[in-house]
Length: 221
Ligand code: URA
Image (cartoon, rainbow, N blue to C red; front, side, top):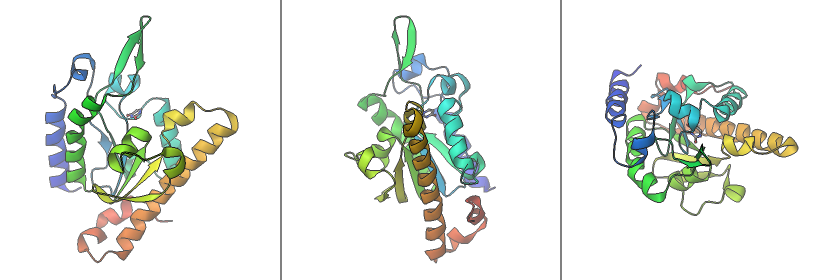
């Protein structure tokens, strides 16, 4: 493990879990900072925590997380091969008829929170970012990205060598039958595309920093 990256991430986590820059800090149970391998060349970015993530402080641990784990496993990968973060770090929710429901974060909440993600990216320096769902893809790739037409495409991004938009596992879970199976296959394929892109960039790069131990973090077979 690179001490300096781990130390920088730990320091950032300490600052982030005390964040009170927006009103979501009033209702959250936990800040979901992000986790995984901070030396990974592949970062996965979701939208924001739901109920289970808010309760535990860990990203993608609910049903959507199980599906993400399955899609990683289909590529012979696990959480130790990637860093998983989110556009916003605290749960956005509303109470309706006495029930708490997730809601999309507002533009202000996103712009207040994303400096935390940007700092994570600065420290981890991923080669490839896989953006899950529209809010993440619009932030990482381009504001007017359309998931239906543009997922799976390798885009340039200022945050890494490139980024790929993929269907959000929570969206796939809302589909049934063939639609579900199709969505899951696309997620598996987009993780594979991101993994291959990491391998291609490393192979083609003459930068000695890209040929160290972290070359093994994304399975090549
Ligand atoms: N959905 C997300 O976008 N992120 C999580 O961490 C969990 C569910």
